[in-house]
Image 1 (tube, rainbow, N blue to C red):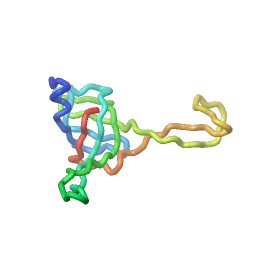
Image 2 (cartoon, one colour):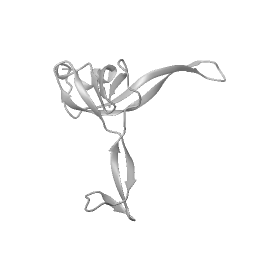
Image 3 (cartoon, one colour):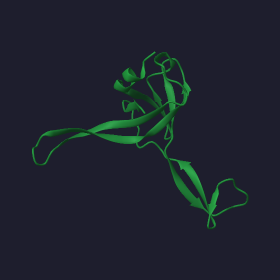
Length: 124
């Protein structure tokens, strides 16, 4: 089982896309992954250069979302998006959601942004 120092140096990869809210990574219980573990999903973008020195600044990390492990198998794990955005609607009966000045504020999950097989899944 990897320790946290080793784990931070490893970039896991997206191995499959279930739907716009769930992805599968290429590591599972055999690698110490457990339900509840959180990951940042990202891809590596273009290389940028300092406009003054023309020195390479490195490659841009394009954030596609955050996810939490909801299911673990031996060699893979399923992550569900944890990012949300607020939707304001008018109340329609009893609700356990916050009501603010005649509107209901619901938290709705955000989709991963164009996830692709091979994207990086970095432990948070």
